[in-house]
Image 1: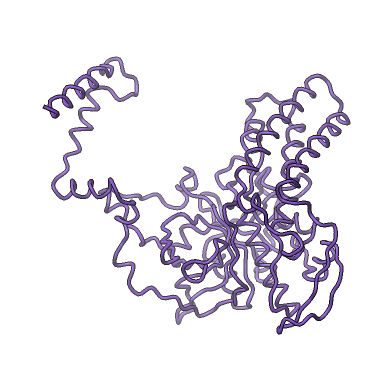
Image 2 (image 1 turned 45 degrees about the vertical axis):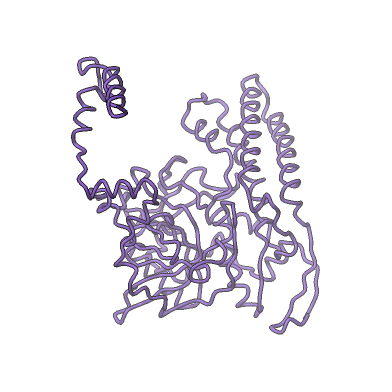
Length: 465
């Protein structure tokens, strides 16, 4: 009886669909019938369907053979300085950059331990991004709301994600402080609510600035109104993240924990004494984007954190050239800012990234043949997460077998590190920031090119989270 009722309802549903003659590109009754006819599961497929109804796809697609011979040794490794945890925030780019800097400071200053305050630099990152949005709205106020740039600005008023140039502009302007000088808060560890409220306020303010400009407001009046708006943003940030210190007292300790000296610093003084290097000029941003010509310089508009800062500007290179620089850096005990599409083929239980971890094609009786260039063009893949590249395992011929990064997800498999096969590195690595001393002279010459300016909505704009 139940079967007859179900068939009756199915017949009514099919009858309600438009006839073939009335359909222009839609699914008509005849097509739906053909689609239904094409799916004729046999006994094994029915059993698989039942399993998939109540099981994680990754569990069923996991390649059992790939679980064997998982080697965690590395021929070249920069010693880690302790795993950090970004918690429920998109601050991976900030954690990564500060972890790279921390490693350099600990080595150069002979410090037994050091953790820098992510919250301190995050406060100024969010304040600067508010200003970037508001000034961008003023700059484009003469354009219609459906202009591509205006629409993009209102679609992306604020984010807690970012990239290396945002880090370098931030640190060179505001300096750094130890973690004890500005501790984490609930909202710094859980950024979504603050991000939504600030974004809502910014969109409201954006409309107000556009109306003022349309009513003939002067540049001075718009600048004055923008500053009042930033006062509100500052207050919201201070109430949730805490107010950044103008100066702080820090005690240097030796390897036994004994106090050596105590001094009061400004954040800028602390950066100059502890690090001192110019992050804006001493490093080269590299990208592997096979959808565009290699050995060219590119710049992405509005891909920055500070209005008067620098857009993400990078050299696009073949993956093998990027690997060579990464290997030289690791051999010289220098960590690097690295970002990738971390969600693809990630086995979280083992902390391992490999294209053979899962056989999705076998599971669904199809294939997924797009290469890296096509995945970029169609928004199927882009940089999504930044980590600290710190190890490579080379074979007897000097070719990489696998790589390792220091992650910012707290403790986990491999003591909080992720290991990636070299094949995965080829397919899902996107950005690497390298000290200029590891970059060949011919590659450095590319920096003299006038960069090709890409729009803010370019597929590779996506910030690292």
